[in-house]
Length: 173
Image 1 (cartoon, rainbow, N blue to C red):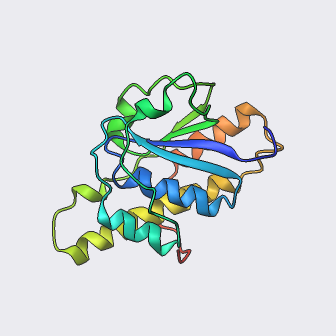
Image 2: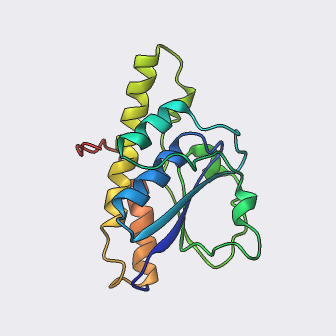
């Protein structure tokens, strides 16, 4: 793999929570090594306010964040992605959009924090838990020595990260 930033697309169904948080985490934790984007197979049209809170805690600029459909990344002139990661069970069972290039793919399933019903404090706790799980997997991936691994090894590692239990990261972002 080349020694510059890698475009990565995070795909979920609604593009309102998990994929949004993963986009921010890849961009911050990757320290320029990745350019992450998020999308939804059936975009909800709105970003969840609790997801925005988590991204702002990273000091990530959320002013450009919006819920968007995968058609934005499936045009012939779209940026070719190196990696596509689905982050929810619904997206794993759906057909991914046909994207330019030949991205490596993996599924990293996380529970939907936006589906939780309860008090705001409890919702915030669920978002924090899922956010930390995403952080753990994103950290594992951004720290892979991509410059020395061949495509088969990278693909194997991407999928293995998604198969491991989604443990909460102890990092304080």
